[in-house]
Image 1 (tube, rainbow, N blue to C red):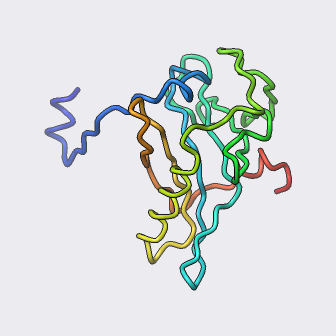
Image 2 (cartoon, rainbow, N blue to C red):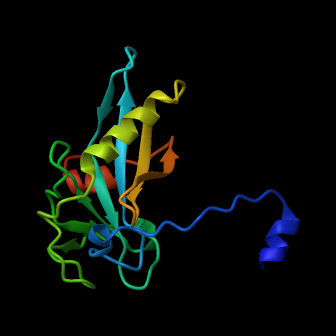
Length: 164
């Protein structure tokens, strides 16, 4: 398969991100990421809009809702999860079904650094004002951008905020 991929076209290979122990305690099989949505106004002020965490479930190695993952809202100031988990089927999880970790009250590590990185990255994209950053904390306690979503969905924000 690897040989076929290389022969078929351009390829980017990336090092696997191994998450730190704290975020892995939620669900060790997936890379659990922070969705930090930034909005940059006409004066280049960057705002954070309804951040949430994505947490995998079961044997899935991804955390997204389409693969069965759940979301929980993060308090922007403290980095503490302020809602229970909820999946795309609207099932609410007080405790993670695989790890029995209580979702609400969980403290995200390196929160201030993650917000700082998202804001810094937002300023680097002058043509896109609204970006959903997926951010991970690796096993060296480094804060990393996994990807930036220029057309980020509102599903995770609306489900966790329950306002729409």
